[in-house]
Length: 92
Image (cartoon, rainbow, N blue to C red; front, side, top):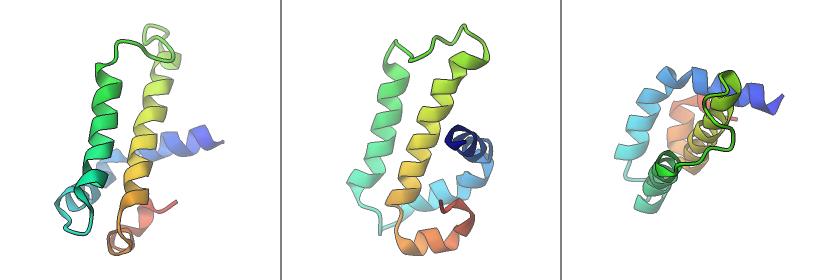
């Protein structure tokens, strides 16, 4: 069930764009909290191995969806209360 919640979270990514912009331009979010999701995402992209190989069709993209949703949820968790209140639909 948690997988489907994460999948739904990723598919509404377009709704996250204003939040992401506000997150990265916010003075309330520390530099470390801004860099951590970016670094984790880049490390995952640059590593040549996947948990499940991508050539296995839908199953191969499952780990990509999970990692992406974890990074996005981490950013929502790191966001200050004022930013979370502004984008209430992103709350857990």
